[in-house]
Amino acid sequence: MEHAGLERDRAEINSAPPPKRTDLTPREQWGAAKREFVRAAIADAEAYTEMTVDEVEKEYRRAGKLHRYDPDTEWMKHFARVARKHPPPEGLVPEMDDYLKLLEEDEAN
Image 1 (tube, rainbow, N blue to C red):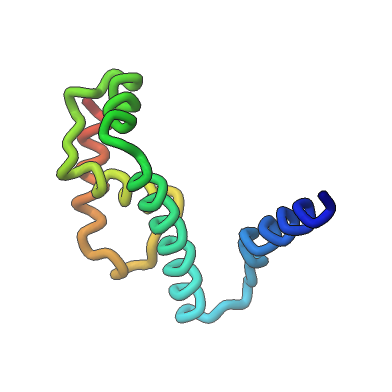
Image 2: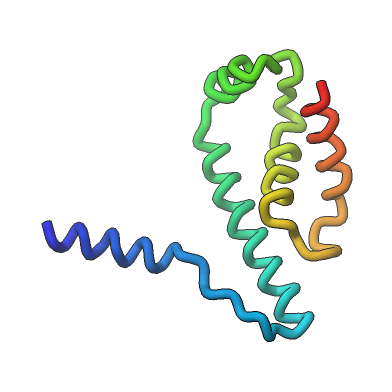
C-alpha cells in the first residue's frame, strides 16, 4: 500500500507546474508560454480523442447546442478553448484568431 501512495505522490510532483520565475528574458518567456500551451493542447487533444461521437453529441445536447455541433470544426473550437486558458505566444498559431472567432460565434448562438 505504501508503494501506491509513493507513486501517486511522485506523479503529483511530476505533474505540478514548475515554479514561475519573474526574471525570464523575452525569449525564455516565449518558450515558457509555448510549452504551457502545447502541454495543455496535447492534454485536451488526448481527452477529446478518447471521447466517442455519442459522448460529444451528448455534451452538446446537454448544453442545448446540438444543432451547432460540426465534427469538422470541433477540434478548432477545442484548440481555441485551450488558447483562452493558456494563451500561446504571438506567432505560434497564426490561425488562432480564426479559431477564436469560430468559438465566439458558436457561444453567441
